[in-house]
Amino acid sequence: MRPEILVGPLLAVLALILVLPGPAWVRHWAFLDRVPRAAIVLWQAGTVAALVAAVGAGVRVGLDLWQHRPAERVWVAAMALAALFAGSVVVRLVWSVVAVARETGHRRARHRAAVDIVARASRERGLRVLAEAAPMAYCLPGLRDARVVLSQGTLDTLAPDEVAAVLAHERAHLRARHDVVLDFFTALHRAFPHAVRSDIALTECRELVEMLADDAARRRVGPESLARALVSMAGSPVPRHALGAGGQVLRRVRRLRHDHAHPVLAAGVYALAAGLVALPAVILAIGS
Image (cartoon, rainbow, N blue to C red; front, side, top):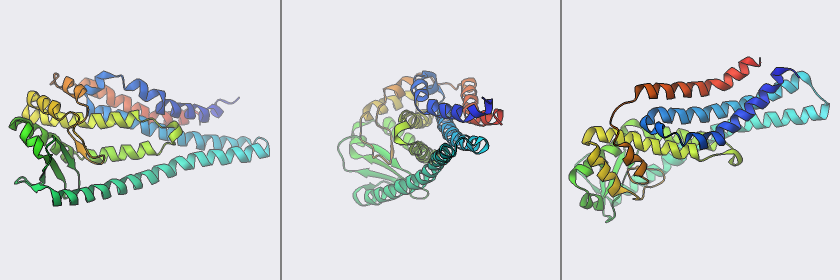
């Protein structure tokens, strides 16, 4: 058997590893919490590499069949399956990018309009206060009309420095456009068929985005105020299409004890991400 014939199956195996067992293994790398920005790049690189490997596997198998032409019926059927597989991945990716952008954009616009009607406008630009007794805080991203939403319960329950920490967290989401990062990752996630789709990478990316906002708030108000605010906001509801300071916070509070950069670790994670993206191309080049 000629070695280049194995390139297609090898790429298919690589795609399956990157989608299924790979994320389950990487999620236990606790050191990634120290470099959340690099960790997000790593998760996205793994997903992109899986997509490239899946499309490359379909294309390469099709080319091999075209060159070697087994029995006519087998050749036609296999060529059709290979083309259908590669094409479906590409179509699903394009469609999911468009669908996610439209879906989230419309929902956020409707939610902003509703908030402007039922919430009290603050003196601070873009801040709205809901007449809700339970602590709640989230932001609604937008190009020109972003909103930060707090409940009256948040203002009544948290100390002034803790409220400042929550506001710094939400505004960090808006400044860095973390919604774009998550929307793009959601589109990549939806591009995979349900049978070979893992929620781990998307879940981890959402948690890492919260850590990035935590780091921005910590630089502004300090780790103690932020930790108290996160504990007070734990479990508070956040709309699905918004970004909020509530949710699962134990993991995030623990990492606030470490207040220093890790440039060497970040560089290593970035290098690993670059290697993942390049791996399918390298396999294709070796088999050419």
